[in-house]
Amino acid sequence: MITHNPVAELSAFLPVFAMQAYLIAMGILVVGGTLLDVLHKKSAQYFFEAGKTSKANAQRQVGVGEKISIAVKTAVVDVLTSGEFCNPRRRIAHLLTMYGFILFLIATVILVFIYPTPDTLAPAYWPVLWHLGALMVCVGGYWFWFAIRVDVAAEGYPWYRLVRADLFILSLLATTTFALIWSFLQWSGSGAATTLFFVLFIVASTVLFGSVLWSKFAHMFFKPAAAFQRRVSEAEGSRDNLPPPAEAPKQFGLGISRELPRHY
Image (cartoon, rainbow, N blue to C red):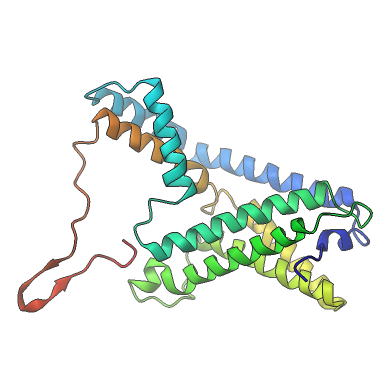
């Protein structure tokens, strides 16, 4: 089943241009939603003002070469390996979800725009990457949702408690879960059930890409910029007025230890 190309079989019922138009529309929604998010939350203004403040408090100038080195370090540590997560379980879950989503998204674009029909036979690794990416999202996302979330793991709230910030992870999990079920049913020839889960897949993905303004989707674009600015500020020596990082757990009387939150 993992080598099955669901897009090629779908082309017998849905015109290729419709599939391609849908992906283009989702891309426009992401770009538009991100721009609206920048305007609504004034993110660009925040970064500009924070940069001015950092330069005003700088104790040394950071050259172009050093900024390039900081950018590379930010990309490797903060983006590619999610170094901001101190909790190893949360980091692994985040990396599984992030790289799974990237694989799933790239494979979807390749299958829809390059190998959309049985005549344009796709190399076996593209359907494999499509299924593997969706599975990685499910493993990392469900692990995070049921066991690692701060309000579940540290604060004792039930896993089914929902807030608006959960819209991104829930719509992402729904998209990849319904995609896998749809592909399996299509491969096994289940008829009406296949159509049902394809519709659910499309609805979930539309919510995922169409809710950028209200979800944490745009957060993934701002985090690298914030991490880079933080590292530049540290190199300039302009962060000395910030409070120190949280200390390690300390022992108090009667052998009682004060622990940091489990997500630390």
